[in-house]
Amino acid sequence: RKDIKSEFSVMAEALAKELGIMEVQLNRFKDIACEALSLREEVRSLREKIDER
Image (cartoon, rainbow, N blue to C red; front, top):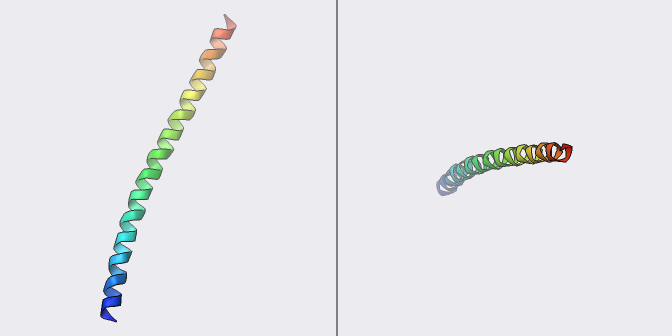
């Protein structure tokens, strides 16, 4: 019984660490997606300016 509690404790710690890593990755991907959308809008705007000439 003591071993099971210890094992669950280790698993819970590992899960918490993994969730933290996943959260960091998710935030990084969100930042990348925002940058991509910003660049897409900049391209659209520049194309409009070129087309006006």
